[in-house]
Amino acid sequence: MNLLLLDAAEAGPVVRLRGARARHLRSVLRVRAGQVLRAGRVRGPLGRAEVRSVEGDAVIVEVAWEAKQPEPPQVDLVLALPRPKALSRTLEIAACLGVRRIDLVNAWRVEKSYFQSPRLARERVEADLRAGCAQGGHTWVPSWAVHRRLVSFLDETLPRLREAVGLLAHPGAGAGLELARGTRPIRLAIGPEGGWIPRELESFRDRGFTPIALTRSILKSEVAVAVALAGIELARGMEVPK
Image (tube, rainbow, N blue to C red; front, side):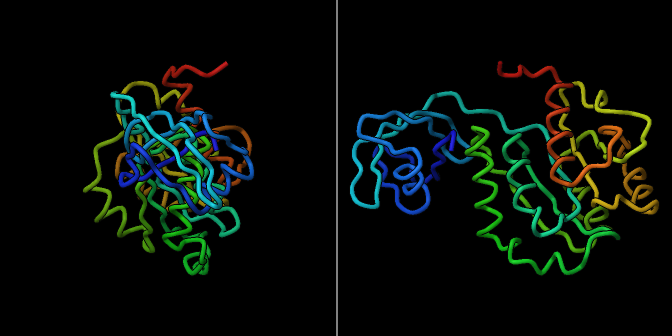
């Protein structure tokens, strides 16, 4: 946990933490009174949280927020629903690297049983996204939606979303992540591990998406998400911590 993530209702100044966050603070970080932690409010500012006391299963902190509020991420992710065992990791990686919105979509090579996975339960997905934000130090917990029909997403949902540069990850494409340069929002589409079928590729192209190659290798979903989002960050000239 690199960021203590608090909800809007926990704006402070004094917050009593219980549950998973308190357990992590007590058992993993072994916090003590007077210790100062980096904190953030969901979709709000960063700040600091000073531990006032540890009382049984609770940790009491006093928070102070910075005046400046971070900008939302500039990347929206369209992701073919991964295997259930990979879903949590993939969501955490996406939130860790910073995305504004995640649309989990169906595809020809997505097993229909994936949509019945308990890992898609709202509480589980929200926990995965928050864990990613806490790791990456971001306060923007992505919004997300599940779409069981790709055509419905493309025809009905996509036109209502914010305008963005559409990039479609596909092995062997002629272009690369240099197309991510600039300041306009990006909508990145990453397919299933078996890849998009030709009809799906054409559907995305018809809606303005440009196919791009991430590497010469064939990647698993979670690796593709990490490579693509890190590549976009580098293409946009963002400072990389030393």
